[in-house]
Length: 298
Image (cartoon, rainbow, N blue to C red):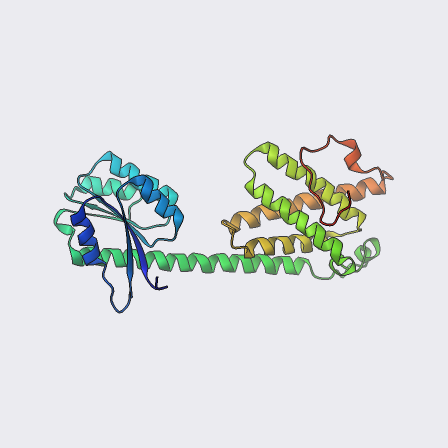
């Protein structure tokens, strides 16, 4: 299908309405092609919505009913921003208001359902939707760039001589690149698992393994800037992945995870300053799941 084509889902079991839609949604100079997918059942419609990108949903009904409102809500829940236009054989102002409140962009009925008006409503709905998607993409890209820029600033060299005396002056990324890469991989895995966790037990396992990560980083004599660099590398990979669905969630959860890791590292150095070199792992109940370090020996 041409990249500029509009993909429309028509939920309708009336052949006359199908013919009307095909007559209205015709190619022109500004839209080389329409692709119309026709289904008769809600389950089929939901499968199409989940299976690929759409530009518009046309919901054709014979008469206003509560079922139509529920169908509209179901479609809206699966695709929150998708424009939905309801087409009815009889116009009912109260029902049209309810349809819009249920998630429809517009509701046309009776004598309004003619080719010129349907064509105009469909085109305007699609154009607004595409513009909004472009704006959302630009906003997301800008948020990612700002987050990476802030982390880049935090990763810069320190001018505090006390910090350089107490910790290694050479960043972990340069001094021990293999360890940096391995711990970054583990940190990224913990972030992914935290984002996917459905229960508190799963989240608690991730937090427990974060303690182990902090201890290992403490053994490597890392400082705050090393942690930020690890966080930056892991989050950058996450945001660049084509599988990421919510970049804002990844950024926010990542910030919390970084703060927790810093807190654990402070606890590690505090125990060290008190002469307690016994690993923290020996004083706790083993977690239900452990993360294997890449390249680690059994």
